[in-house]
Length: 448
Ligand SMILES: Cc1cc2nc3c(=O)[nH]c(=O)nc-3n(C[C@H](O)[C@H](O)[C@H](O)COP(=O)(O)OP(=O)(O)OC[C@H]3O[C@@H](n4cnc5c(N)ncnc54)[C@H](O)[C@@H]3O)c2cc1C
Ligand code: SF4
Ligand code: SF4
Image (cartoon, rainbow, N blue to C red; front, top):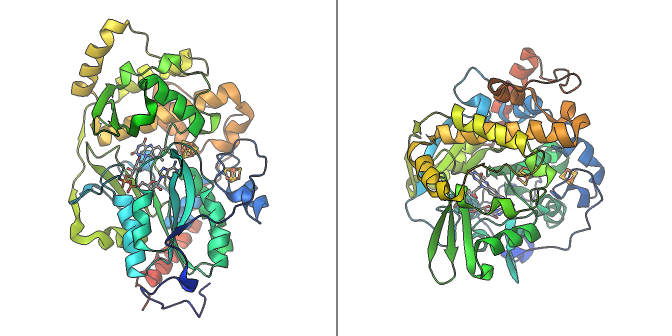
C-alpha cells in the first residue's frame, strides 16, 4: 500500500534526517526449533514464523509463482537446479570495489537504489565493531553507507527484524540484500508490510555456521587467525585467504583441516537447507556459475531493472559450462553417507591430497556445471542429514524438485518422507503469473 506522503519523493533524503547506516535496538530472539534467527521471531508478528520459515513447511512452487509469476519449470534448461529465471550472466564490475567479496555487485546495487531514490533504505549486514566476521543487521539510508557492508561474514543476523523499525521511521521503499533463509521468510510476510516497493537482491548461501564456530575454523587454518581478513570457497576448488598485510594464500579444498572440525560444525539448519540459489530473490548475485567471475540469475522484471541500474558499469558475458558432475557428486554422496551425520571426509592418504587437488582443478566441473554439482551435493546432504537427524520433518521440508535432483544418485523417498503435492494447479499458476507480471510492469517505472 503506497503512503501518499512518501510516494514520488525521488532521490530525496530519507525522512527525518536518518543516519547513513544504523542498527536500531532489536528485541531478543524467541526460542524456536530449527532456526537461523532471520529476525521474524524478534518482530511483533513473531507468530508468523509458522508460515514464514523455510524449516517448517515451505511451499516453493506456490512461493515461486507468487513472486515470479510461475513456479520453476523443470523442462526449461537449469530451472530444476537453480529455480525460475529469465537469464543468467557471468558478470563483474568494471571497477571492482575495495573490500567486496567478489567485485561488489551486491553492494553497488544497494548504492544505485539509494542514489536513484528507487529505495529509501537497504536492509543488510555490516561487520560488528570488534569482530569483523560477525554480521550486524543495518539499515542503510545513504549510498555512502553501503561501502561498510561489503564482504562476506560468517554467522546469522536477524536482518528481517529491521523491517519494523524501518517502517516506523517512515521508510516505504525498501531493498534487502540477504541469504535464502532470510528471503524466504521475507516473501512470506511481504504482504503484511504495506510497502510501496521491495527490491530483493539475494546471494546464494551454503555451509554457514555460527561466528564462534567460524573463528575456530580460522584458528585451524592459521596460527594468527586474527590477521585473516577475507575467506572464499572458490569455484576452482580452493579456499582463498587474504591477510591484513596484503598476503594471499590458496588452500585446495582437499587440504582443508575438515577432519579436525566437530561433526556438528555446521548446524542442522545449514546442512539441510533446500534453497542454495535464493530462488525467491529478484536477482541472485553469486559466483558459483561464474568461472572466476560473478554469476547473476535475473529472475523477474525487477531483477532486470536491477541489472539495468548498473548500466555500463557491468561487464557481462555468457556463462560457460564444462566437465561432468555425475562422478564427483556420486563420490560426495558416498562420503556423506559414510560420515553418518558428521562432515563428509575424503578417504585419502595425505601425500595424495595435493595431487588429487590439482586433478580436481584441471578436470572438475566448471561454470554452470560446477553450480549444478554444488546444488546436487547440497540436495543429497539435505536428504541424508534429515533422514538421520529429523526424519519427521522430511515430508514438510523437502520440496518435490529436490527429490528429482537426488534421484539419479539412487536416493528416493521412503514411506512417510514425501509430502502430498502442494503445487498450485496450472490454472492457478497462470493466474498468478498474469497478476505478478502486471504488478511488476506497473512498478517498473522509478518514482517521479
Ligand atoms: C554464509 C555465506 C555463504 C555463501 N556461499 C556461497 C556459495 O556457496 N556460492 C555462491 O555463489 N555464493 C555464496 N555466497 C555469496 C558470495 O559470498 C557473495 O556474497 C556474492 O557472490 C556477492 O558478491 P559481491 O562482491 O557482489 O558482494 P559484496 O558487494 O561484497 O556484498 C556482500 C553482501 O552480502 C551481505 N552479507 C555478508 N555476510 C552476510 C551474512 N552472513 N548474512 C547475510 N548477508 C551477508 C553483505 O551485507 C553485503 O550486502 C555466500 C554468502 C554468505 C553470506
Ligand atoms: S522464520 Fe526466521 S526466526 Fe522464525 S523460526 Fe524461521 S529462521 Fe527462525
Ligand atoms: S545455508 Fe541455508 S539455512 Fe544456512 S544460513 Fe545459508 S541460507 Fe540460511
